[in-house]
Length: 430
Image (cartoon, rainbow, N blue to C red):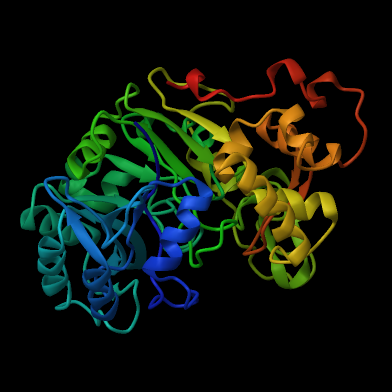
């Protein structure tokens, strides 16, 4: 069975998160998107945990949950949470985010009971804990060997393992002797597998891609996704696949182009300054407008730590596919700034009615099939995104990248879509 899994989201008790992030909305939009496994997020928050317990029932023997009364098309939930550890290392404050996965509510509550000693769990769905990353991993694994933990969005400038402002230069520096319990890294929106492949030290880890969504809308949830092929859909099967980095079961990840992410290039939002690494380095990472320190982007940070050239492809790596949310594609073609406009929703809903899910539209629908529902320009845009033949003006300092699907007519044959190769065809990855 193909499993489309978004394992890192947030509930409605996290800061800057939509109040519509509840179980019913998550199920509704997961089915539309094409997800069949999602993380609950925020199990450490007592009110969210209460809602989860009231809304979800365990699927016996699987370590996964589904909404009570759910029939037909199913969405499974895995019990997950993100936490922030804040600690001092070599006289510098480190703020690192981690995702915890666990197979039951009972074990989740044991974890929460322990973590409550280090910070308020009610203040935020993503609690800030005064403990080291090493202590967190050690205790989570001590509570149950079935638990899994991995660093979240590892390259973003703030709150991440390799972040420019409070991160580390190596995983071992962060997790010390508990590094042996880390089997995966989350790449985040501003990086993708090829960028991470430039560091040989990361070869042994599974590279996970999740949305870190703060709203249930289909242009947020599932925008980055892990695709597994599993004989049985269970918590242990998913975790074992990730731990072993098994290419027979871990088929590929769906990634937004990293330039779309909010921290891909170095820049200064207040001054509208966005720079590639080479230009930022020439300026000593100082804003050319106000002379303040620039927010160092992910691409520049990777350049600092990389020991391989761009384009290196390590043996045994898991595949990936660049895509963009369908709402973003429609907004770009229609030149609309509001993703939730009625016009976009009408086109979107017509496509979902015909093809079943957004992933079917993005990955499988042919140009001919698409033009039966939408005009040829929109159909071509979807195929261009599928074939990774779009331009994106890189995001920087908290600003999303700008999508340019039809920037200009190009004579370069690489920019032209191939109608003989218009489908991704999931069989390529299976």
